[in-house]
Length: 85
Image 1 (cartoon, rainbow, N blue to C red):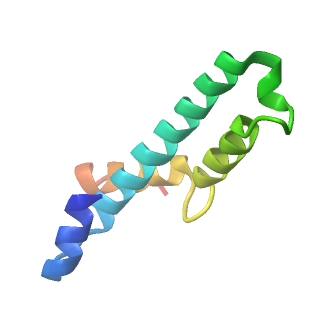
Image 2 (image 1 turned 180 degrees about the horizontal axis):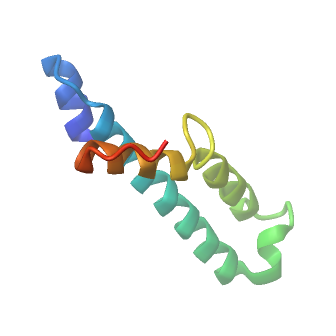
Image 3 (image 1 turned 90 degrees about the horizontal axis):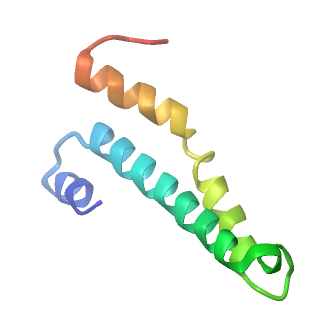
C-alpha cells in the first residue's frame, strides 16, 4: 500500500500495484479472521464476541471494488499481457 501511495503522489500509474495490495490485504484479513474463529470455536459465532463480525467484514472486502478473482485476472493481464476476458 505504501508503494501505491508513493506512485499516486508521483503521478505514475498505480492500478496493478493497487490490485496486488487489495488482493493480498483482503485475503490475509479473511485468513486471520478464520483463524480467530477457530481459536474461539463455537463462541466465534455468537454476538458476545466480535470475531464473527471480523470475519463478515473481512469477507466483504474480497467482494467490493472487484472480487479477488477479478483482481487476479487484472494482475495476470498486467504481468503477462494476456487478456483472460
